[in-house]
Image (cartoon, rainbow, N blue to C red; front, side):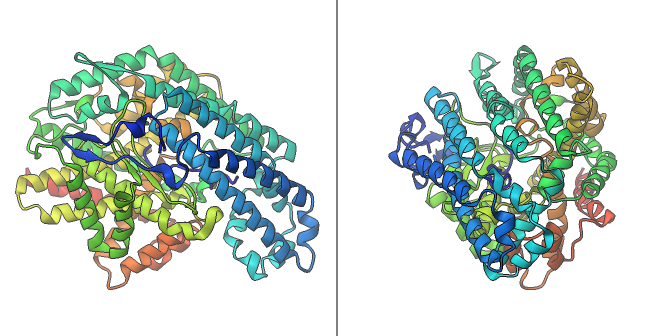
Length: 621
């Protein structure tokens, strides 16, 4: 299957049919009744006969495809009817890709719902192996397509049938300089299951199995991390110390995983001819290295006027000169208390979406009415949140760990933004629906901004407006400053790994260096924080993904400014941009809004929005 179409999860971090999680019933707590997703739109359960049927069909179709087309692409595409012949081949390839996407998505979603259940882990592993084995028969297709002469391919794409797939073909041919000989590509592909995919799985199972002793309770990672946002400072400190203690006990395992995956990537990059450690990500994102470098340079230069300044303000609100690292995300002393129940969170987000576009709200509402969301915290469930697009013949699913915090409401708005984007882009088919990461975070961050602006406009109490504004600034700092610090950490680790393994101690030193630079002197980094790099899943699953968050946030700041000053028609143009999926380059999609990310001043404009909010907070005292 294609690399882009298999990039299944979007965001910070899948139903389970008739397994244990489904039997448990919807979670009920202070948050109200929380929904658990219904995966029956994919398959009824891990033992469903349709799974065996579809796996068999995928195998047979993949073998037949290889038999019919391997070794023939250059010759047959050059014929007079080459365009129509190749279009039929691409349609068959896309149908297999869609079926494989359904199988892989279901296995991944089930595993995310409970990745410590041995039966589910076996199912996930078995399906992953079958997908890899089947896709080995398809691997030749992209390789041979890229060997077709440019003039021949251009002439073939002149036929309407193949012209439909022009964006996908042109996208694919950008990989041509880094393509290896067929048997080497096949070896890399087959070895992935016992290579990086196995290490990814080990990370997931290990992080889900860890327990953290907070007071008298043994907790999983998600509720422990949630304590870092608790109003009780003693609980925040206890959670941070529990995290530090368990991470320390497991540092050799996480250091080994990190070193192994960095070396695996270095080998692949070296064979393919990538010069910079992040070039393969930039290629996958279809973004120029200099654009990312300009973003990173702008954000790092802005640390003093953004995070450093904000955390000094926050320390003052707590009547301290410095905040311990576990107080970085502490609720403000004057913020409203209480838990936001699920129905209220749903209403907040849908109202904000509806104020922008009734179509956008209608799509988002289906996630609630049709049970496309899994919200409770459960033992063995993947931490964080994501929106999984599955495949165009189905629909996305959202995973959350909802605990009623204001930040959880923003996460819901974020993931539903992804979900709306994925629904709108699905019409492009399995090959062209996936969106490069440069725009993948745009809809999610825009959804957050709509929700924030709506809440701000409805808040009359001055102190609560201040708390709301400060919360948004914190989210933006976590999305922009923190993610660029993550990117800087990754660059340092992958660069240094070329000269040998990094010990857990050395990884901690690099982590503390980049965190100190980004957080500033108002955050007191205490012992134990040196191992907090261990739980960031993006470092493992998607090296260098993290800059997409900063890219999306800064872009949305600029986009929202256009919206606030726009005449009629902005919402329609915005939804058209989302519906384009992967059919257009990000620069082309931004043109109707008068935005150009290649302009060096572009990023400074997005960052100035955050700085302006901090200016406003300073005037509030």
